[in-house]
Amino acid sequence: MRPGPERRDPPPRTAYHRQMANRSRLTLTDDLVAYVHRHGVREHPVLAGLRERTAPLPESNMQIGPEQGAFMALLVKLIGARRILEIGTFTGYSSTAMALALPPDGRIICLDVSREWTDIARQAWTDAGVADRVELRLGPATESLAALEDDAFDLAFVDADKPNYDAYYEGCLRVVRPGGLILLDNVLWSGEVADPALPSENARIMHALNQKIESDERVDHVLLPLADGLTLARVR
Ligand code: CA
Image (cartoon, rainbow, N blue to C red; front, side, top):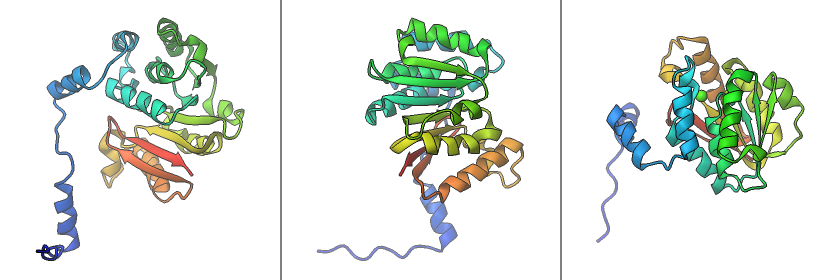
């Protein structure tokens, strides 16, 4: 016997909130995060060491977490990336994680302005045995980006100064090949993007970019509520 027709949807607002009930309702307690780090990620010892090395820095919250590093490394393998661009390297967690996921002849170009932070990154690349896969270009990323060739990369990760995010996104659309992937970090900006008041300049910047990508015909995308929000945009 055929099942009866689906019950009619309640009014839109109610329907929306009913759908909201299907989302993950996990509250990420410290214990749960520790569980994920312990059982959900195989963290390379150099990456674990890099977290310890970075923790005392006042900017340590700029480092991505182990699960994000593992996710990005898996993306590198899933799309068979061989050429990666990173905008914003900091102390090297993401570049080391992605470089470890590259084939031996793969290459990652890292753009950053800080010699102090990237000296820590350099040590990590050496310790992880991937220094020959990494090329660091110090200087303003908008200038370094302009010097790169069209369609030169399979994957780009943007995690630098937020006021230039739109310029970085546009630059990545030029240098990432069709079918390649652009990753944008911090797109939820601690949740401020969902606050109608958009209480900070960076929240306004991120919200504007999120809206732009939402209707950008040049990409297929998803905004994942991972860490501080990570958008995956596949270049069409
Ligand atoms: Ca970040």
